[in-house]
Amino acid sequence: MGLVQWLKGQFLCHLIICYGFLVSGLLVNLLQICTLPLWPINKQLARRINCKLGYSLTSQSVALLEWWSGTEVTFYTDPADYQTYGKENAIVVLNHNFEIDFLCGWTFCDRFGVLGASKCLAKKELSYLPVIGWMWYFLEMVFIKRKWEEDKRSFVQSLQNLRDYPENFWFLLHCEGTRFTEEKHQISMEVAEKKGLPKLKHHLLPRTKGFWVAVQNLRGTVAAVYCCTLNFRNNETPTLLGVINGKKYHPDLYIRRIPLESVPEDEAECSSWLHKLYQEKDQFQEDYSHTGCFPGPVVTPPRGPWSLINWIGWTCLLLYPLYLLLVQLVLSGSILTILATVAFCSAVSVGVRWMIGQTEIKRSSSYGPTSVAYLMLALVSAVCTYKRRQSLLLSSRVNITMLCLMNLGYDKLISHSIS
Ligand SMILES: CCCCC/C=C\C/C=C\CCCCCCCC(=O)SCCNC(=O)CCNC(=O)[C@H](O)C(C)(C)COP(=O)(O)OP(=O)(O)OC[C@H]1O[C@@H](n2cnc3c(N)ncnc32)[C@H](O)[C@@H]1OP(=O)(O)O
Ligand SMILES: CCCCCCCCCCCCCCCCCC(=O)OC[C@@H](O)COP(=O)(O)O
Image (cartoon, rainbow, N blue to C red; front, side):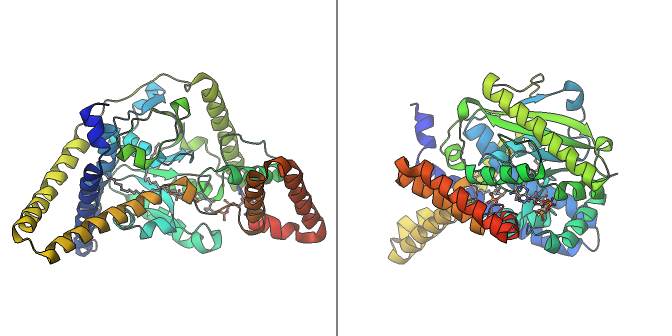
């Protein structure tokens, strides 16, 4: 292992990275608050400033991925479509299997100059995330509780607000609504079976309402749907901690541009259209698992220097006061100052570790399969692991129990808990 690679694994380096991200993030949040008085006077200017501030923070993670870990996303796309990227608004549909899929998405945004303005349909919990979540609030991200009756008004309103957005933006939708786990996949395929839809091997069944509402409300604003399919070579399971440790991953991203006019307006037709799209995406993933590549030529724009320049700029700016503080600390020899510094470093480290935890699939929400069905499956897998020899017998027993419950009229309860 080279010296540089060794350094990338050191806690002190991680502490400096996290300190820079957290403190610059809080400063960005503060500056965003300062734009509040500008909104009623010049809303478009306030939005543009927020895009720049957003870029300044988000691009740090792009720099971390591209320059620190050396991860290079390979883009597969039609060269004719490539010409339009970054020059129009788009709805992006992306699979949700990996802990760093948002980072790879940001790289794509950065390469085409839409990183500061990029948006997504995100679960409400993410809006409370310090630094990132607070920043998103000012960038007019759309947050939902994933309960349609409670969401529909604010969802439509947030989409309508984007109609006069002053910068080109991409609006990311993970139609699966949650990250892929084996349990969720199993339940989701039971729903597919009930609905008479073909089973998917690599995706959860997409939830179609959000996509339809987004398309309907953004017609005339958005020019196309970008169907994006992400996978990693050699069955890599990338993590944000891996990236921070300087581990290099090999993501492949296949992008297809679909003009918005070809998406049906009628809700039922749009829903079938999306299901068909996911069946195609599933086939791409299946082919990828055999061939190790996506269809279409590789067209990868070169990585730009700006994310790195911005990152180095912030780090230098913030390390200087930290350096002064440390010198002061050594000179003073005061136990109180030393304790305060240790407490501060610990808080930074714990805070960022907690944020990183939000990206981990093992901490994924129980959205989708819940209560009865989910608990049953969890129970089955736990028991199966513990008592391997009896696993077949037990799982079939639980399946029989579920069938009995359905026959006893608990069908509604089970399908409600599934949804
Ligand atoms: C590569 C390029 C990248 C570009 C990047 C650009 C920008 C990046 C910017 C930021 C990056 C940040 C990344 C952060 C990511 C955060 C992502 C998230 O938070 S994902 C979670 C939130 N998002 C969603 O949930 C979106 C998907 N969901 C929907 O759209 C839903 O429709 C909904 C709006 C939430 C409403 O859901 P609801 O369930 O109420 O309604 P639906 O009609 O859709 O579904 C009901 C329907 O589904 C059936 N059902 C039941 N169980 C299941 C199941 N387990 N799976 C599938 N379907 C199920 C149920 O029977 C109902 O059927 P029916 O209507 O027939 O009765
Ligand atoms: C220089 C940069 C340093 C970086 C230091 C690390 C900082 C930590 C960054 C935290 C970034 C947080 C971005 C959160 C995005 C998480 C997206 C996500 O994966 O959400 C999950 C939802 O979609 C679905 O939720 P589940 O139902 O699966 O539950």
